[in-house]
Amino acid sequence: MRKALRWLLALVVLIGAIGVSGATAGTATAAADPDIKERILKIPGMSFVEEKPYEGYRYLVLNYTQPVDHRNKAKGTFQQRFTLLHKATDRPTVFYTSGYNVSTTPSRSEPTRIVDGNQVSMEYRFFTPSRPQPADWSKLDIWQAATDQHRLYQALKPVYGKNWLATGGSKGGMTATYFRRFYPNDMNGTVAYVAPNDVADKEDSAYDRFFANVGDKACRTQLNSVQREALVRRTEIVARYQKWADDNGQTFKVVGSADKAYENVVLDLVWAFWQYHLQSDCKTVPATNASTDALYKFVDEISGFSAYTDQGLERFTPYYYQAGTQLGAPTFETRHLKGLLRYPGIYQPRSYVPRDIPMRFQRGAMADVDRWVREDSTRMLFVYGQNDPWSGEPFRLGKRAAARDDYRFYAPGGNHGANISQLVADERIKATAEVLEWAGVAPAAVKKDESRAKPLAPYDAKLDRQSVEREQTLRP
Image (cartoon, rainbow, N blue to C red; front, side, top):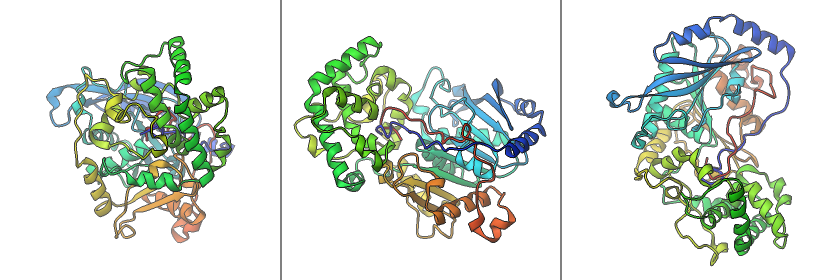
């Protein structure tokens, strides 16, 4: 999934600083559980990696022993990395997943700030170092990953006995949703940000409709023109690309050549622009007759030349494997590039995974989750960006969504960094009130009047960044 897939970009970093009174209260609360590290390490399967100081919290990096195959424990085990941002055992806990590697820098997701709680952040199986050795790739699927979460939740629940919420952005939002589908009673609620829902992998007309209407016509036209021009000047730019790769020790064995990699980079361009930028950024799109230097720089800034090198792909092999076996991947029309594309069919997950890893698409996996969300889910909140390409195929709510406490909101003009704080006032208040209620910490004033709902913890500019990383590729 393109740059979008590009993963995850940045979910917008908010601005502000934590107040002295908030920090002091947090420090006192965390100090009330001085033995939390020892309590966690008494849990069978837990091992300690490191602790990093953060005022008001205990921040631990840990490993938890998981079965390679939850259906057959005889297949062995592996160490799954996770982090714990500990506030207090009498606070709710947010189970955060990115769907990729876990960051070992202290951070707090938006729901964690809203409920002023603890946060458990788990690395997705097969992302290193949480990869079984040897790697049996057939054990990388959404049920196995959901069961990883289920086991870790069961291990930690006796310590953190208050309400739990699941959350994540992009592939992490997908992961949080799959977790609830397979283990609907573990969490008290789920907040899924910018989560794609590719129900039928071969039916992607929704993306064509999206790109026909996103932003204004002038910006759409100029982006298409620059994308075409990048292919018209292919010979000159690929020569520069190959030189850059040679100078930086980058190779192209998986995709096949610098020319093939470049075609993928250019195909990412329009998607990546809207995934990570705003309508107001259209002024940065170069003119079609811009210098090759300017064009090269723009393509690199938006799509990223490192995306389809062997080194750029290796970290994300587990994602591309899943996209090509269960999750699906988007396709879209490129009529304006007619006559300029040399490698039909290259723009798909199989092209980005080493050939010694077998892949077979499992039809029905996404349709099953989609049906569950529409018919059986409860206390689910989906937040999308209006101008994010990944919103082209969102999770759909059923006719009884309101009765089941399910919601879907769009941030006006938002991209892949959309969150609750960017919603229009009424929806922002409603979403915040629901998160507080699901976590069991809604103040009496909010229960009486939802309009008074606001995050319980003050904003911390260093800690509060949405944990979706920007990567140079089309990933969610």
